[in-house]
Amino acid sequence: MIFLLAVRNIFRNKKNSLIIILLIGVISALFFIGNSVFARSNRGLRRSYVDNLTGDIIIEKKSDVTMNLFGANAPIIDEYFTIPVLGAYSGIVDALSAFPEIQTYTGQVSVRCKLDALDTRSNALLCGVDAATYFDMFPGIELLEGRFLAAGEYGAMITRRRADEIERESGQKIEIGTPLLFTSAGDTGFKIREVPLTGIFSYTAKGQFMNEIVITDVQTARVLAAIQIATSDVKPDAEKITLLDESLRIDDIFSGALFAGDDAPGDDSPPLTDVLDYLFFDGEDGAEAADFSGGDWNFIILRLNKGASEGHVIAGLNKVLGGFDAIALNWRFAAGNSAILILLLQALFNAGLALAGLTGVIAIINIMLIAVFRRTREIGALRAIGASDSYIRFLILCENGIIGLFAGFAGIVSGIVVLNAVNGLGITIENELIAGLLGGDTLTIDFSPSAALLSFAVALVLSIIVSIYPVETAVKIQPVVAIRD
Image 1 (cartoon, rainbow, N blue to C red):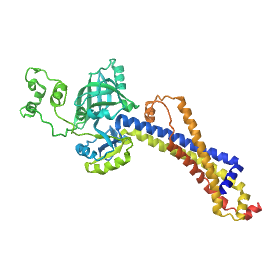
Image 2 (spheres, rainbow, N blue to C red):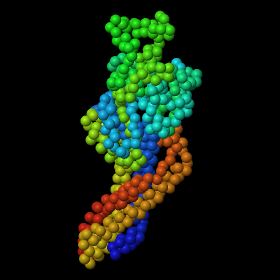
Image 3 (cartoon, one colour):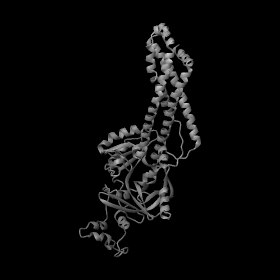
Image 4 (spheres, rainbow, N blue to C red):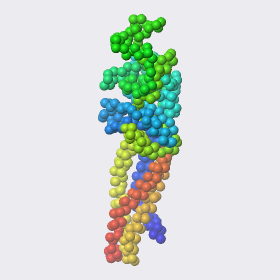
């Protein structure tokens, strides 16, 4: 009965009802469209980073600030931040076997350095990887030229974008096998390493950040990051132990004395790459003489089985990792500020929408108050025949609740129309930053059920909130006043 009475009152006051539906509907539509954009961005970013770079979860050394794969997530200290070493690598790997949700894992050493190639210099973000497991983990890495770095091989792979920039600046096309010289600086001085180019690749993800990445063997990254090799498997032969002889002068390291036999270069000092090969590698194929797989790493990257809960796995891992002075974080922290920025923008958008909606709320309250005063006689008559305060409250709340339902539905429908119109335009995003934040270079907004439910709930809650003051005004109307008026 009260529902039918509420519907009748809405149609009797259809002008005011339509204005309220319009105002609440606009707020609901804006909320739906905005959060659909952010939901699309979150999905696109997650897919891009998880398939290309970060995996689902990373394990890093516990510190005062959270780290992404190439530095601190605090911009102020990032330039001066050194990524700490995850020393308990073997123990952590053993602990991972207790989690069936983990599909696979790999290690990474990260270092920022300068890259010199064909008389050009540029900044590089070095990923020192275990080639045996790394490339299988990331299907978003597409090989364009050359080959993937092989296990036990030292070399580097650059992006197509970097290769084009080198060609444009130097006037020479960079070929597979071209020497790449990496230079890093730290507390222990400068580190220099030269390795050949083995491949050119691209990421399916967009953004300048991805274009700066260079994939290299882990030993090269360790040398540049000044990480000591933590392994007990190194067993140099007797000839190489002569390097530690007390009678050996430092100049002799770069003389022909170390290269006895038919291959001795005479008085000419061998180049740096020959010395490094002599110390760390054995054989013509460049295979490492010692197994460094148990060495130190900065990160362990995990991929989970489809459907596994990130939050559940992270909670379980952190119970175990406390004893290793390590912590597990999700992909967003590993991706860095670009992924975290989306959450901040979403919060700012909703906060701004709330402030803008406040103006609409005030307007709606005024409209409802006018409607209540116009219904003084009706409310007074209901009070005269015995209607209680709770009945009057429920009647008006029911009316406004129905209006909120209509407004929420109208907001979602109009939002879907706008989404389809935007998707039909096929807008191309030229800016790499925006393309990276939206997870693609074409502006498309997918329908988000969660955003639709939230916007519908916003409309309903808003219609109830704006009813509070008019309802309390209505219950104060006395029957004698209504009859006199």
